[in-house]
Length: 275
Image (cartoon, rainbow, N blue to C red; front, side):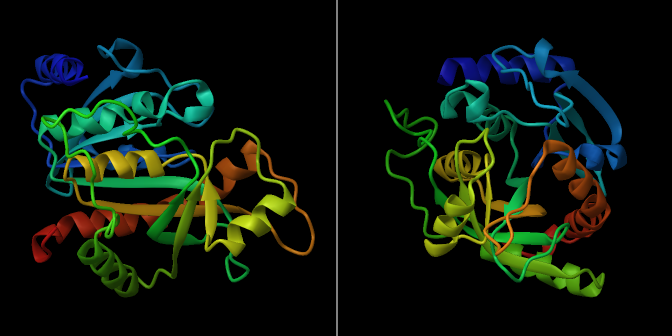
């Protein structure tokens, strides 16, 4: 894998005149609009990138965007890969390793998720404080010490200083946010009412089909993480609710401007925190 990472890094540098991003961003279902405010863009379709998988999900445009966002050099995935598409979790997380070797110091993740906390509402923004992993761990198999340690610590999977900055920014912008634990499962079927109740019982506040493998790999290679979920549907309530991908995308689109405002202001103030 190490050689493939370097091959992909070399390819991307050749296409971007050696661009060295400071922040890596992964945008989930219906949340790719953040790329509209990235300046001086260089966009590369996944299909053209050496060793990259290809996104097959509606709402994921499948492009890697290089540019600047509020003065920060960034690289953003406009759409991610998922285990349910038939990729292994190691393949799903390959771009995160590439980001690390491109030079990023911070990983920012976003996703659309189903709310299982009864205090949540559709289109709420939730800062992820922890997770429960029900997907195959992407670190299973031989470990290459050039990439990361065999047994990475996960006691602070989501950086507390970045969470504190995000809270401060949201408060100043008068944007109401939730906090909670993200449960990562395989998908692609949405959860049954009994599964929603189970995930709530084990400590989850929302559930989705991504993000957790990316966080594990980021921590494996020493990257701090900030992650945000947009609550796009509600499960496990007294009355069962039918969920469609179109409803998920619509709810994400409603919340996206608020999420974008928070992230932009955070990028303005990253120098205020250690991460």
